[in-house]
Image (cartoon, rainbow, N blue to C red; front, side, top):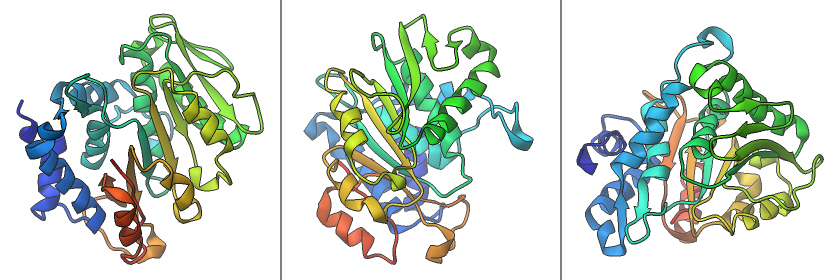
Length: 297
């Protein structure tokens, strides 16, 4: 499949052509993707459609665990396909390693952030080709870290395919196939000393009052070839300066909440998906009617 025909690119084209109503940051993200398809090779960047397809197909293995949709197959929506496909599809041509390693995902409440985050957490544990991968569900409190960790446990138990590959215990999810594991990590709980994350989901980052735990997690990734820092939040304003430190490699995925007075058509609140370059764009973006800011590579 040609990169321009991939679902990630189709979403970008739909936004640019007005088929999908989206905010200015969405359009900028989609413009970046389409422009990079044309000029990325000049910077040794390539969009690997097979790599993007792998994570998108993998999502179908997962099942919803709660509410009316419990037991139903997880079907990624186009805006989610764009996010996951962007992170896993864009690579450095010379090394074959991922372009993006630090990501920020801002989505309004009740749009499935926790369920959505299980996709890259489990994929990187099983099919990323990393030796002894460590995955962490990180938050400031044990209770918050446990929300994602326990949701992933339920997903594994609800999927025969995942249950055959992963062993679920009280404090760890172990992967005998890759010699890896997933665990919960919090500032008020177990020590983060000695960790070596390949994937870290930092949940509710708008509630993180400083970078102490974030720095421990991200600095501990240095020994990995292509780790992913996957930060999730509902708000951004309170920690704009904190996240701005990662602007060299961050993809920010935003959402305008109801209080922003935005009216969106066809999407359940996701307004920004992708990257824009530089702190100057971040400042300008924040000036656009309280549309959330973004920093990128």
